Length: 362
Image (cartoon, rainbow, N blue to C red):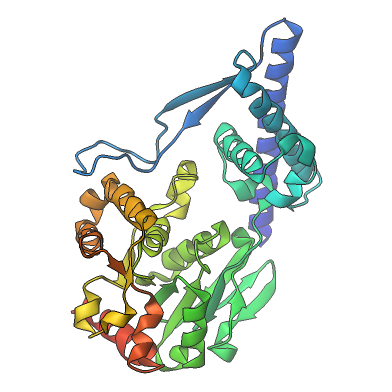
């Protein structure tokens, strides 16, 4: 822990030095009668080349965007960026943490919308070459974990093994997590809290040596970072269970490939070892689901599916995923994970998940 504190202190000093450089450069421009401008690298973690024959390198910038007062559309953006920069500087100097929502409410009449603050924070991360948590800007954690796991966070002990099927919150300050211990055989990530609770009620972790995590929908940063830390530390296979619809697939892709919004940090957030456990469109016949379990894809569902199919990484890294997505679009139907309860309330935990994991191992 002492080593972590020393590293954190050194990183904070480095960031404060960079912040001073940025502000000094802006002041120099103003004092010399020049319009301040800031060059921000642009990143994306995929392009829309469905053949996968592109040369995308998600860990490297694709170009630069110049934010300047000379462009009227940039005036408000630069104002927001500098205000957020000063708030971050204060957080670092005082060794305090704040959420994005905290920052928004410090100047609501100027910011006007949370998304404006979110963009400024991402811009600062790129500009300063760091991750969001390095700025002492934290997410309000919503992830849950249970199973064969024990760890400490900033000296506090968390022992999930004492009560295998009881949910614990995913730690927000993942950089403070240490002493990870587990006898699990795999990690299971489920999209929805309702499925997580179904597994808890069925005593899934008592019957299976595993760790179960849910991001309760689209995963927040702590959940994705914690999952990556567990995979890297424990060297366990990871499986993801999502609804058979385009939003479930997008959540799966966020875990494995990262999100476009935070493409600049994808190398620290993605989990390339993530396996798609289900639910597949082809599971409808394989597990004899009645047609009453199917729902028609909406026009928005179809548009989203078509957009996902254009992502270059599908053809290049997960062509079998692409096939299942095309099958869903062709059939024009979707279904939820809970549809397997048509067989029995515990079918998901006692039959479906074990059979799917066994199939991946053979």
